[in-house]
Length: 249
Image (tube, rainbow, N blue to C red; front, side):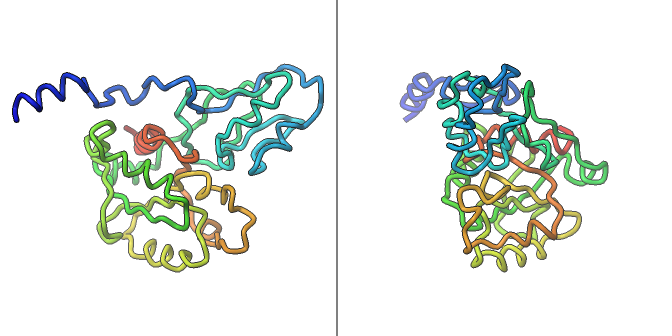
């Protein structure tokens, strides 16, 4: 038994991602989009027309990562290759407007939380996750945060079973009508102070379901959102880095 464990460890090497700020990703990974300043000679609007969620605009060119599902179609159809996707997985922001990438931008800004929030949650943060009608893609990535690779618990950040034990709520999915009331009940059960995190394109903008009559996004309209974590789904390291930067870690 002991030798089997040693053999397995030697074969798998060290599975832990130690450097979460500068991890290496495969070339196929799509992170922060990059829009060059090169002139769009064709003036064709192909990139905007092909986007399934209306995240791409032209004149001036911009990509809203809060809407983007990172399918890469806009980069594929652009004749001038004006649009590309980098390997930068630092996508989170505390402000919705910062998620809009414009020409020559290669990063997303995020500011630390207030001193009060950092004082309360800087060393220990408990989160309650609510799946509000999503496809389960974001939930799978959030589950991965607890595995040996990412081990979010080493930073004092954990998911809990009850909102009464939580410091904040993580919302995934576009918020369907059936989940609107349960989401409100969960939010009200959180003790003060509390933070709200939107995880994934569906939670931030409605994603591919944004025009559906079966969603109810009134929660986002009446409650303050503290952190936006884009992606479809977001990578676990995008989530971890976003949280740590927000709480001053």
